Length: 355
Image 1 (cartoon, one colour):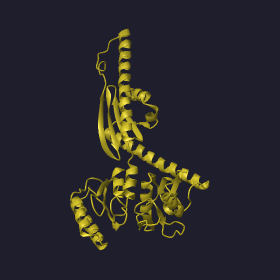
Image 2 (image 1 turned 90 degrees about the horizontal axis):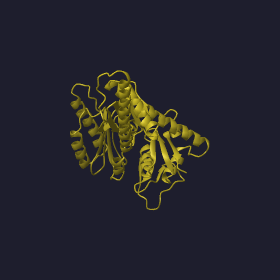
Image 3 (image 1 turned 180 degrees about the vertical axis):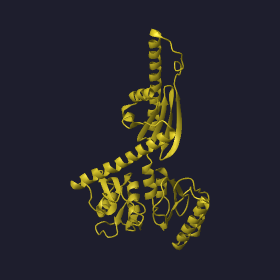
Image 4 (image 1 turned 30 degrees about the horizontal axis):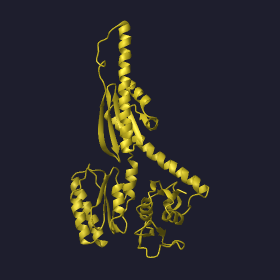
């Protein structure tokens, strides 16, 4: 989140450009160029200054169509743009100039791609692939002692003794793999570990994983690379869905106990006071509701609210309601949890409070 935090301290207004960038089409590069040309015309109509357009032209000239299904470019008035490719296509493309960047699609995409490990193990070691935010971070190869793995078949008592020595070696290798898995999980703050491979090696590995890693580890049935990747993606999606379900369940329980705000005004007041632990958001690109915010603090308020006033001398501006709420939440180190519209909080904003 360091890049997002830096963007929040940058000078507005911001240009937010979100374009689909499909690769499986003829002349895909040319199609992306045309999309940018149309988006640029919208920014010119919105009054984007020439220096900002020059910065965007330079950034867009370096984009490529095969980085993802869509691309988000958030350009402050001065300085470097935040550029990120999204795994899924956009329902609505965006090209706007506003006081705040539209962080919702970028953050929601990151939330869909949790940090995780994908592990393929055998009796001699393992390959551990670490992912953080959807990108491969590192490949760790663990090689244990391999003697006793290749052998002829001795008979009688010597065979039983040889088998026991081999089993001891396999378990020792698994313990070494487990240690490296725990270290890799800590490095990327993993939410999920999937493991596939030799049945005996997997069994030993699961026995040696620390409890905090074992509880987020799933044994896969697939053996091919494609099946392992598909099953891992499915398990990651289950973790994301469970996060949403748990947040909504907690929110409804707290609202029922009058321990969380029931309307948007209450959410904005809690954000201003730094009370919000989790901000629940459904970000509809067509939602153009406006809110006020102080450029120098986390204070925010709906325009209609009569009870919330900024501090004397505050540098108050107006922005899109959802973007104002997300900004205030991030400034107070609150988590932003994206939720579906149906079944979500009324007014598309909700809060789980710290106190």
